[in-house]
Image 1 (cartoon, rainbow, N blue to C red):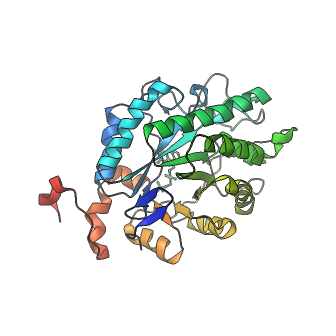
Image 2 (tube, helix red, strand yellow):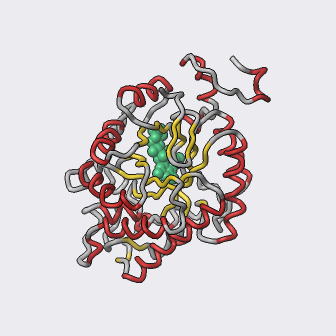
Image 3 (cartoon, rainbow, N blue to C red):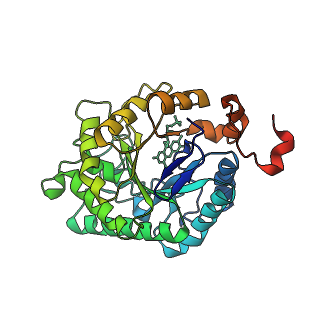
Length: 332
Ligand SMILES: Cc1cc2nc3c(=O)[nH]c(=O)nc-3n(C[C@H](O)[C@H](O)[C@H](O)COP(=O)(O)O)c2cc1C
């Protein structure tokens, strides 16, 4: 199952293994990609990962998580991003990109958010977004989608997880607005609509969500499924299920700790899902796909330390996989 292909619209994955978006904070301060990104994403593509989703890439310099985030807020970011897409394609993988605005979690002097409520810790209290700020953010998402299309990505992922801006609107913890945007689904809908005017309808659109906040005041899987169901008719194809990130709370993470959330979201939305969380072996990934009906499985941190995990272990699954030719003499 794990090594079965997966097709969805334009996506044709050779296996169900995904490298999820992981910020590398290695761009220059203007958000440009460099040789590190080529080596980093290129080696996971050589390593046999089916789908690589590029790290949270900022749609607005004031929406960055750090000053070294990759950027997609300017047209001249496109050539550097295209190099990343090309190296991923060259080595037989499929290229996704996560686009993001960090909202109240942006490391800037004047962060914005749905309400003037701080995330806590060292984070500054954000300024409550005006209607113009919201309009600009929707436009920035739209323009980022246009640039992602120009750079040649196969999948576009909207970051609505981990306490970043789109999620901040969806959570009752961070959104205390009194206008129509007190319903965070309205902003999500506007963003999906705007992005869909640029991102071709035959290409897959993904939303990453936090399905649970680990505190009773936060969102539930049912609330997040409801948000997805309110936009899915606009052309949302797959949901990337994660959790947490909007409240400073300790999460008891164990291997596969978020897989039940992926299953719940799939049941409630009837959309394909990506699931994961502390999956460090292909055996567990296989279990997620075959027994829990997770369509795709993401392996994050383990791929940081073991970029060649997939090509080193696929034989244990009795499958043949195209091995990178230059490395054949090193094959186990
Ligand atoms: C270094 C690092 C950076 C991350 N950056 C992002 C990010 O840019 N966007 C995102 O949605 N999640 C991000 N995450 C979360 C991962 O995508 C993944 O969901 C999480 O690490 C759980 O999977 P794992 O246990 O297999 O690592 C990051 C995680 C790590 C370790």
